Each structure stands twice: as structure tokens, then as C-alpha cells.
Length: 165
Image (tube, rainbow, N blue to C red; front, side, top):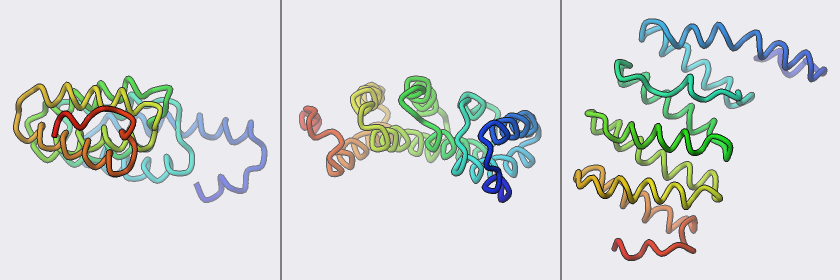
């Protein structure tokens, strides 16, 4: 990655990026320990060169919790208006997991998407409202916290969410 900055030709840069992708995708599909190391490196690469494909980072049910947490962070970095619907579906599904901390982070991730993509804020709040309907205490708490924090950050001010309070 350090030498990527030295490449001046856009076609060469795209070609090199395309050649790097398959090995990383392969590493994300192996043992959890290798997967974790690969994800840590992918997280660094994504900060400089966001890829087009996000589904590779969606959590699998048998992934260890530390891999799932890293995947959440990468997905948040990669979310765009083009893929927000896929991401929200993934986060909504993640909010039904058994690990409470992972569920909380998944719900917070929805709020982070709203802050990152203001045009998608309404979609995000709709997902949060759906999660509140689950009547699971920790999901409801986290979703309400996210909505309140987003209000403070002026993301949802134009929407009528005060009825929750």
C-alpha cells in the first residue's frame, strides 16, 4: 500500500487493486485467526482505497465475535448511497444475534450510517423503529439511544422522532 501512492497511472492502479482483491477475499474465507489478521489489514487498505464489493464483509453465523466486530467496522467504512439498503438489511439481521454486545454495536452502526449518509437518514431511522418493535429491552434501549444521539447531531431534526420520548 505504501507504494500505491507512487503509481501515477490510474489504469495501473486499478489493475493492481484488482489483483490484490482475490487473495484477500480468499483469506476472509479461511480459519478465524487468519481471517482476523486479514480483516485488520483490509481495514487499513479500505481507509485509503475503498473497494466496490461490500457483501464479502457481511457476517456469517459461524464467524467468531472478534471477526464480526471487525466486519462491522469495515462495512461502516464502505457504506455508500449505492449500497445502503444492503448494509441496513445486514445490520438489521445482525441485531438479532445472540451476543448482546454485537447486537448493540450493530444498532449503533445503523446510527453511524445515518450520520455518514444524511440522505439515507430516513431509511436508517425506519430500520431503528422496526428494531424497537422487537420489544427486546437491550435492542430497544440501543435504538432509542442512537435516535437521541442522532437528534443531538442534527441528523434527524427534520423528522418527527420526538414521539418516542
